[in-house]
Length: 302
Image (tube, rainbow, N blue to C red):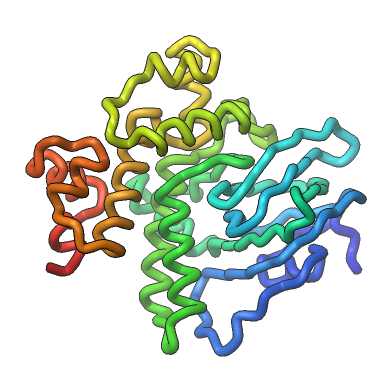
């Protein structure tokens, strides 16, 4: 095996450097500028060196929970507690080391998505309005983003569950994701450093509280108190961890729950709006259309 400290690889070859069992995606169409891999991991006590990858790498935890530790070679370990729904994002020019300990003897299932540079460049040109160097993404560890989770689950469903998966549909999802990442997670000016964001356990405590009270009025003060921070510092660190302001993240959680109920239940649009905190059907429809792109009824197909 080549010396990972002196090379950068493409996503197609990452499976050669990672332990665990890659889950085969048999008879799937090839998608231009997109590489998707599924892995099932057990605990890794000895550090592994992850080579720098040419493309931005997005990793979504699909199942299980683990304590994941990362460091630059020879540096201090940075630990993050993660479970299903958490994601990692990296566009590092240098290799780094990882190890992880799964909880309860469970396997730790993840999905890797590599977005090709042409895809990133197209999204970057559209956002910047000029042919400049592509925008870079920052490193994020153990954060949550309902939009990322939704798109990656859609990609997984299309490629695994559909009998005749559509490369065009998968490509459009990947393009939309590239735009979201560039908007929400642009690199800080200090390259190569992990972002000083809200600690993972505090982020989890806050997002779980949000999810449990989607029908309540949003309160920045309550969330900041839960995180034991001032409102200013909580808002700043929360946005660094998730790419969204707390209020916007709360709306995204509401819309994710509304989408689920619209697809999986026969409840009325009014009832679903009430469950996610909107006493006015017109207000719910307005917010849903702004966030999702269609009205609740159109999303349901009725």
